[in-house]
Length: 198
Image (cartoon, rainbow, N blue to C red; front, side):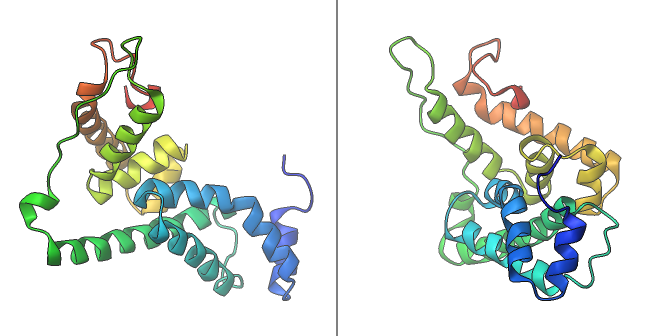
């Protein structure tokens, strides 16, 4: 249960111009927005810009939000759409300067094992993030929402505007791609791989 005023109370106050109420909503949901944006774009200036723009768009739409979905779902929907737009813009810029073959490379550096023969967890997490970043935007969006943001299949379908069956098929394909890319970093039993990627 959320401490303090409810979302509905804060929304009512924010609609009357109460900046503190709007700031409280930002504080309440900035982590959810960040998880979505960073999952899609990786950390960096692009992610920061999209995170800020998400709340700018939300502020502009305060009077249009009627609560058909939860506020978190609504914000994640905005963040996801802006992230996908940023990815498309990034891809257009990349293809101006880099050959298609170079842009599509999927090779990884050789994994470095520690003294005990295990791959360093931080390094493995970096490779997982890189593997997710190499997915197509449709598959990446499903992975970010279902596995990293822990949305249900229904919520994921609602945010992306697709059928639940499409969510499941995209997730299945994405998981196969991730497992294939991350094979060099795991033991035969997959034990070194984060649970949600196994």
